[in-house]
Length: 360
Ligand code: PAP
Image (cartoon, rainbow, N blue to C red):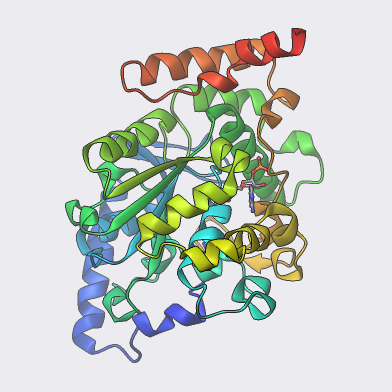
């Protein structure tokens, strides 16, 4: 878990009053106690996953999650970006940040050139990870936050702000998640041999059973999908694959939803194309800031995770290079069953459709 970006340090008044200190200690300690009462699995290295209110969350996040449930109280203008891990969080953060602040920063001197998207838009899980309830309401309004938590684990008050949800085909999400956690667990364990990492087939089995960080994958998607059907003015549901196909039109929708639509002049002057270029995989992944090492200071480890872990390939359909056809069909079948009747589907990227198109 990353440290607090400087722009957010004002949420943590220092020194704390003794009263605040005692309150925070008591709150976080009582949440810690919950950990011993819940089922826990150690099969998804480097995390231990704890089953809390039907969701598998990394166990170090349990007190943080409960603190978010109790104390996250966004303002109506705030924007919450939500993703299942590895669904394009980094990209969405960059796009939303660049769009909201486009009148403040020029392209040549933009914070995204020198600051990672994760530091521009921190996770709630990071902000609540300091055994202090952060004073988020002193931040400028609107502020953009991010979380991986499912809708069912967020407080009801979350619908007072606007939520942007980005989903991705589960096969690509799984491959990206496995690659990231495998790389992380090798780095943390000091292993030199890939075989000592996180075995692919084992990860696949767990993911298929719904056991993955913030899983089950499908429940996460359905929570926000149904939210977007019920309250379209509050939840914008986006898809990674569609955004890759037509990023400019999606940026237009994102800006409208966030309450800062592009003007006719901006459209004419190519502002959307410029921002899409700034936030593109090629641009961001080649910046020095997105290559260097940073420290994870969560309880899981002190080992470094380099920002380039968040920039692997950025491709749609990379699963074909990792999953056997049987695995892909199995995941497709589970997805079809889980999403049945919801109106949400990933039909265009199923194993069957890819096989059919490669035979044409
Ligand atoms: P997180 O949920 O842990 O924050 P997230 O950013 O969702 O991570 O996952 C990284 C994925 O987004 C990677 O996908 P891949 O493993 O399939 O390659 C990464 O390459 C992709 N990604 C990162 N930045 C961009 C971008 N600017 N455009 C498109 N995809 C991106």
